[in-house]
Length: 465
Image (cartoon, rainbow, N blue to C red; front, top):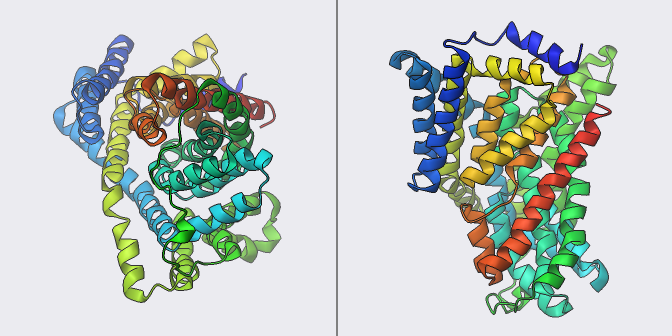
């Protein structure tokens, strides 16, 4: 019996039975996705409202009663907000402290300052990955652009050759590594272990960044040559001096939650039952909410007080991080409601049975679904939410490692071919001063390389996990 068949048999006992004939459920799922796609891309409706409309469409077409539909959606909305919302809020607070304290600048200056001209693209990829670990893509991009301009101007290597590796590092972290919203949503929806997914996500991200960053960036820099914009032309070091936390302290603060969560995952593998106290302590400290909460509290002292902030400034800094993520929280929670409607109609069970009959790879199916939805909506988060909802019936019988690989396959698909319906496409275009065609040749191609390379690494890991 194949792993997929085992997964489906285990899922059948837990997932709801289909409430309508198979053809009707397929039509309901397609109609719901179509409503989301059309609402976001053509009607320009906010994804929060689009996901509500998609969930309502699925339930109504599948034949659910309105009270049952509302109950399903609100249950999913609430559980997702509780499971993921706290983590996103804590992650945003930490990122704000990192940026406002000058810690992010310290990481950039230290790594780039020690790199030779030949190694600068590799150094920029490393900077992008480290900055992207705690920060959302858009925040990391805005933060890195002055550095990209400055390094490109001083090195003479070209804006694309320097910029693409940094973008690859940022984007890979956004797609593969929690506590970013996409991976967190998939982990929560599919019941994957966060520590295991974090460890495998870093393992997938490293070779993927190398291929899509320094290696692809070298070719992209030859295809497209653009002048370096005058924006941020002045060296930040020429401005008012502020006290920064040291590089060592900053890296300690950034890596602390990662180490705590990895420690929990490693304890489950290597710490035997005789050391129950050690294991319990590591389990508590590595719980995502606890790990990120500890990281934020520690960062208030290492980054906040370490840069000269007083208590009022630290309070304002952490508070200012929350309004910016309100929209993300609502989208993610609405995605949880959409997922629960799909689950309660029995579409997950139907897709699981179909996947068994055609004997398709679970990882390849997960990537394909996410990539198609990403192409249609332009949103990596919406692609992750929808694909993980549709994959729910296929993971219940899988091991922890296999479930984490499904999450990463969805993450790889969610960054596939950014184009004109993606806000990130226009953000990169404007910052780099490129035409639409040049943006396709550089940014869109890089995202495609990143997605396909990520899938290949996930499939290779699937051979041994």
